[in-house]
Image (tube, rainbow, N blue to C red; front, top):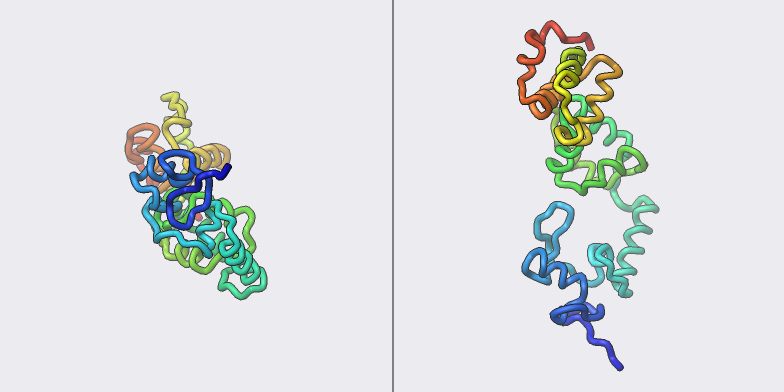
Length: 215
């Protein structure tokens, strides 16, 4: 007994619903079009074709897609693909975070995958030149100004704010680091004050300049 295959041209997966395989059916459910491909950015991408790395990444294991994936990896490890030392990218990321960017904001601004920042910071030795260029294009907000974290910490604890619901992961980690070190970047402190307390930095500190710490 033969098994029906997906009706989308070029797809040989088994039918699951409406004449489509599971992947194309889910695309139809989410986007109203079984042929649309939405990448990490959340925006429609160029059509997928067999014999490409993107098609391989969606789960296709046909021979042309597997060959293209293998060719790409061979070029990458042999150094034939342009790439940038990860240390340079990490240094720029550290500068961005110190100036007030969160990692989530850098991800959105650079239009890269959500796991890319973590991979660059913790595992990568080399970074694809296109990814590196996107991260380098994000400019620091300004020279980071460091202030005492004491007044902010006291205000948060006095109000009993539930940080898990008020702050994202990056700001929450910055808050706990500041509570231990006694200093925090002014831009980050301002963001925490607004999100957790609904107050401006001036309302929390009174005189922000008096709380500045020498770099």
